[in-house]
Length: 75
Image (cartoon, rainbow, N blue to C red):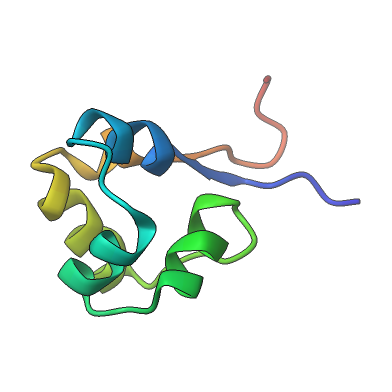
C-alpha cells in the first residue's frame, strides 16, 4: 500500500478546542461530517480552500494542521 504523504492533527486540535465534534467542524467549514472523517483519517486530501478554512477555525497556521512528506524524505 502506498504511504500517505499528507497527515494532519485535526483530531488533536478538535479535542483541544472543547472537544469539538466532527459535525461541528464540518458545519464551521461548510462540509459534511463524513468529509471531516475522511480528511482526519487521511483517506481524502482536502482542497486548499478547505484546508485553510480548517486551519482558520482552529486559529492555527496551515502547517500546524497539515504536514506533507515528500517522496524520498526520511521518516
